[in-house]
Image (cartoon, rainbow, N blue to C red):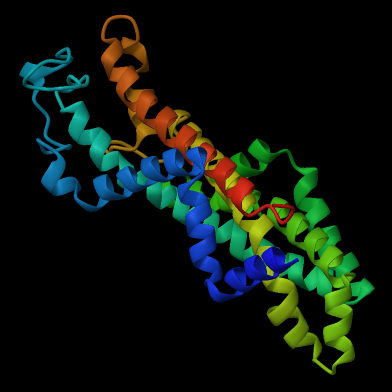
Length: 290
């Protein structure tokens, strides 16, 4: 009994963020995924310093050069250094992740909170709106938005962000409905707390854990879809060094100059894989049962 009391005292004495950070550092998936994300952030922040060449400089005399001492990853179909373009491409990748996640998570969370905490009439109206969005296939909705607004980087990000709203809204709503029925929420209401205090002070903090985990899984998928739009010519337009656009420009050289396809494809794979295993680590760490 004394040992249990001591553990409880230690838990209360140590800030929650320190406990979570310690568990993250002991989780191999979180460490590996966090390392990949940190490298991407550093590359994006210091791209002008790290990149050996101008990513937009065309050198026809050096087109499709294989990897070597002069160009570590080779050059593309117009002689641009692939390593430099991959490094600058991290900026586009992180921008896509940030913008699509911001649109989906912010709008979806608000709709989920309104539906879960509001009246049955409000819940019905909001969820019917979500059902309308879900009636369209994910990729079809994205293509419709891009077709209306025109192909560009920002249009692609907006389309992917809008298509991701229903997932966040349904998750938040179901979590809010579950948390509202817990005994501690009933106790807080019995003590005289207002509905706003209950929603933002008690319910919302308990929604954040599953929301963060879902965010870590949905964000790389959104980035992958945005790259697919660029591959289809509906997203980022040349000569921007976005990995999906780089793939579509070099796809005709798959067998004659494999490095032009392998470089952006590998960068995209490593980034998506790293963020996915980071999501696995966050799921383990933020699991309430642990």
